Amino acid sequence: MPQKHSPRVLIVSHGHPSFSLGGAEIAAYNLHKGLNKIGGAESRFLARVGYPVVRHSGTALMSLRQKEGEFLYHADEYDHFLLSNRNTEEVERDFMRVLNDLKPDVVHFHHFIGLGLETIYAVRRCLPECVIVITFHEFLSICNHHGQMVKTGGTKLCHRASPGDCNACFPEISPARFLRRENFIRGLLQVADYFVSPSQFLADRYIDWGLDASKMIFIENGLDIAEPTPPRELPKNGRRSRFAYFGQITQFKGVDVLLDAVTRIPESVWGDDAQLMIFGGNLERQPKPFQEKIEALVEKAGNRVRFYGAYQNSEMPRLMRNIDWTIIPSIWWENSPIVIQEAFYHGRPMISSNIGGMAEKITDGVDGLHFRVGSSEDLVDRMTEALTDPGLWERLRAGIKTPISYEECARQHLDLYRDIAANRAQSHSAVALSA
Image 1 (cartoon, rainbow, N blue to C red):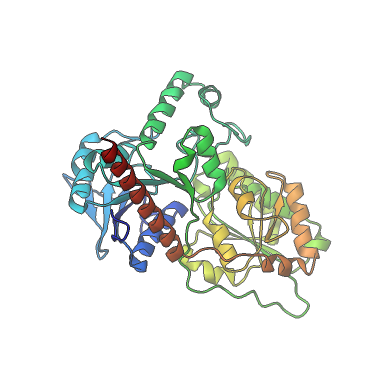
Image 2 (cartoon, helix red, strand yellow; image 1 turned 135 degrees about the vertical axis):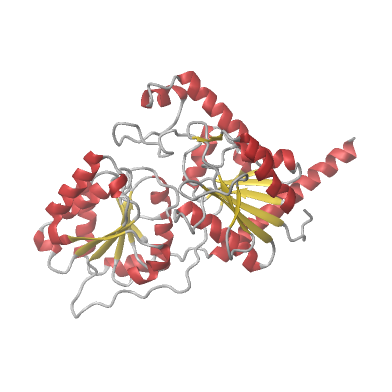
């Protein structure tokens, strides 16, 4: 791929935004759109789908109607422990058919959940000169506990994985099996030319786990939003008293910590104008004890809290009109939650847990406030500060830096692709001269 050549790029994702609206899927699709828009590359998009989407008989490949250059790959035979696709026959036949037809210069994996790590090896075998890039979105390759790096049976954070520590979380799986898992996953990841992380925190964890630091680069995910939403119009003598949570309602997202904090704020501070608005779903899929805990906290909070259910990312500008603060109370490390970028794009200061990607992206006292992870008491203090300091919101808003657009994100990736190809070409020339 010469320096000035417009590369053919295949973006591979574990889901398509038409079926799944997770942050990783959106980031992958935004990169695909951005590469085509800036004009320096020709991008195609391949996304994994599974049940309940019905597959075509005889092939894993499916077209996406009215979406030129976008393909679906149906895969259900997936080993969650090894991140492996059991149906290697279809990888050999159908996935490699895409590679042979498109002959991309670059294959960029934004995830391999459902697809299996074997697809990375398939690219290298089918197209030896192809540039392979992998973006990480969480710790799934390191951690068998949903990639959260939180100990099972509670909320204790895991600071470093090892076969022995992983066996303590999953006693039914031997340390030897965890060691085999680690070697299998790391071995296939190392087939890639480069790794991209949207946060330095996540990159450091993977480097500590054993990936080559010289092959890791930080590039933030890009946003596709037309215009920022102006601040909420306040009534006379009004204050910045509207809080919002955006995201899934799971055991790791800290919604219980947030609800508990809201119930503890004195009425003299909360007043009649304050409100917590929760936008999110999937509570019904959580363990029953967690559902019951949330329901009890909601009842205790009374009219201080309003639930609005799940939302689409396209709705964010409209939803932001009625809020002043966004809160991200996760009890796991997080990486680069899209809600942080969205809130900052719209000029809304954030209140967040003081760990991981959240603490990296949100600077305490500059563009938001930190509270001690898992501590509803500390969150009470931060929300009280937000409600009682009349100049705080404006000071923090002034400290917010606008996140990068999806076009700028695409430019940074295109530069990376070309740098990798140029370095490889120099290496080949050096080998040829020394022969």
